[in-house]
Length: 278
Image 1: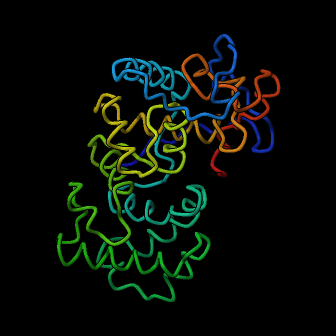
Image 2: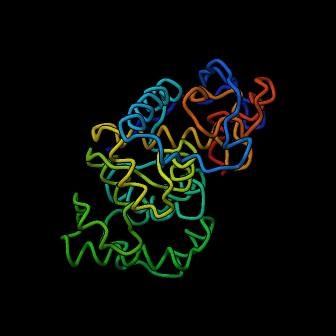
């Protein structure tokens, strides 16, 4: 199962984005206590019903802002996606996609990974960083799949998390994008944004996943994850979010922690071509 290939970006990676392609700005408002006083975005006084309604309104807006959101790892089979996701740790999807064509051609199935020559595999994986540890995981994946699953990637969370290098995040990526099973992918961007949104105060990824799962309809989990990650890469940056060009401003308690001037903020919005750099 392959993901749809997005159309080529019309702008260079160095040029500022047209914010209309990534945002839908709403009427500006006065920054709240998060920006003015540095308090937590999570308001324990907000009722569960109010938080759910706000979260679902923001989720609907994210669907408008990022209609092109998708898994940015290139793959054609569950095994390819599993391996690519394991390799994406501590690097960008763009870097992984440069490595995987040669990797997938050299190792077409689980048995090939299980019997891989370590030195050869490490050489292929070197651009992704931590290549020795990743080679261990990939070889271990192949061996586990051959020994316990007849060389086939399982389609259950309980089985996937037992594989070397595959935690819940990896399992949710594979389940959601290769098997069509809804899952929330709590990566760095996702956790950072849902805390900024004031949806949770949790830091532990499993606890974040549990709390957000209560706010967003299950059928939307996979696409919602992609949209949040796109927003984190393109608009709501870690150090300087583009608050003045963000379509979520009306409902975000963290509005104002980044530049509010629309022109200044628009220059921070990254193009699709440049967004896979964090």
